[in-house]
Length: 130
Image 1 (cartoon, rainbow, N blue to C red):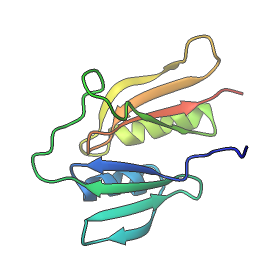
Image 2 (image 1 turned 180 degrees about the vertical axis):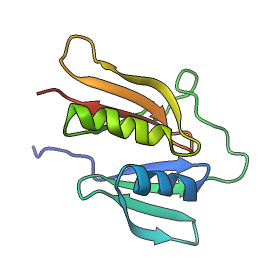
Image 3 (image 1 turned 60 degrees about the horizontal axis):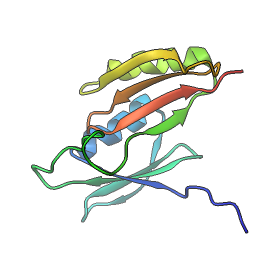
């Protein structure tokens, strides 16, 4: 049996342009493709490929405690200092909200933080430790 890996992650967002700006300006992704008639934009950092799809006006926001669906997704950073820097950079971006600041992940030696990008998607930033 072959190993299965995620090919891409598709996210429905309430403000496509704001979410794309967050991914490109804060996280360093680049727009790889667009589908203007949907509308949708696809971003990549060379490792992760994320498709962002604009919802209709008035679409209900996801609640991780009361709905089935994406709880969050995690982006791994390469250094502990990068976690702190990226978290602060993200908080300075319009519409970003913190769920919790960088903190130890139990006794694992890792540290992580959780935030909501401008479109409401919950993203974990994680440094897995040395």
